[in-house]
Image (cartoon, rainbow, N blue to C red; front, side, top):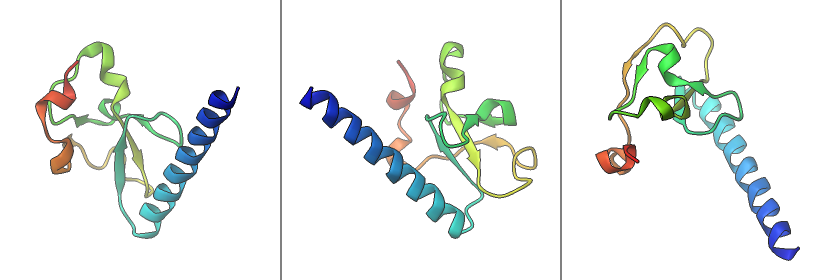
Length: 95
């Protein structure tokens, strides 16, 4: 039971951290962010014309997500996304 409570606590903390990060990005006027989390308003990036830096299997394409942080961004921009150096490795994009 303690293990389950710890997992729930960790999940709640991660959720608060993500929400806090989204609020900070909004305050700094970032246009959009990429994620693999469908919560908090994220949607599959390919539906808006964004290509991942590396190939993604069709079975996993909806897992690569984006969220607009400003009105009218989605649909106004598209193309291949450039990742932070730490994520820009082909082995991270393959199963």
